[in-house]
Image (tube, rainbow, N blue to C red; front, side, top):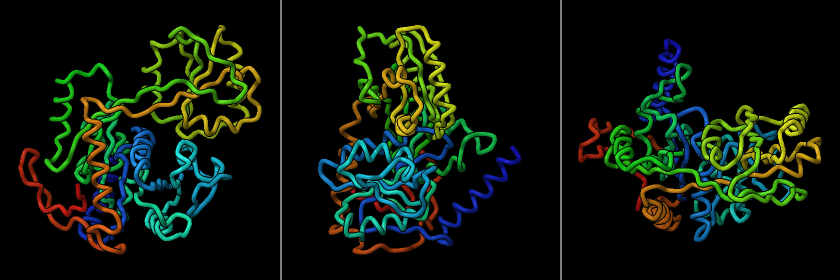
Length: 382
């Protein structure tokens, strides 16, 4: 707890410097949607970013900008036909493969990345940029800030690092325009959602949504995979995951298979030859019939292994997931996102060029049930 207090002081000073203009946040003359969280670990950022890309690409030229965590390159890079996973990172590579009609770029300097996307000849037709995992990257001031909160690790009950998993004090959630509680159990009652809504203690200007993860049909990972035949119930499953929160996929699969044998690795784990041997051995020992299931993110790293056995390669499948809104709010959410992007195109009411200016110099409201939104500067137009 003393270390958490010291950490909180440091983060608080940084946020205050942004709020008072000592550190500058940049706005850009293009719709920018940030998706992120204030906790360490997975809250569903990539699936929700993918949801936005899939929604917007029907009408707009979309770009995703990520820092490219654990990639083997530096600086700015746009994914192309010859791009490999190590060059841009597992999550950007996953989105690049799923949405080849969208630009996927990586740059630790998000301001520089946006400048390149909007000015480079190859990508200057971009109409909206989705920032993946950028809630703490305050050097960019997005037009729409989406905060994700894991249902199983609610920020209202968490503590700052290292005592808990919060990256910044809880009041950081006040910067969000939209808050989404993710990974909600499908059996949650309407009363449960009302309790959550009250507990989140949001301001009137903030909109709250609830989502869950819908599992799609399994996809073979390699061409030599055998046809998967089952009558609604999968055989024995070896579940391989290198994600921050594997509990959800375990929960979703427990009633769909005869048994689950988990092999969990750290988030973004780079699989090695010894890992491949361990997978080969574990699968060989399992009672048959058996299959191997992994996540989309893990598949981008597992497929690079060259010493997986033929038995494993013939039996490994990928579990795609898709965000699903609860309480019938999908159309409302979609319309708000599309309306924001339509009304904030470069030929709209926003400035004709990127500007640098202080952010948040006025005080915020002090009560959740107040009708006032305070003097918070807004860039959203719905």
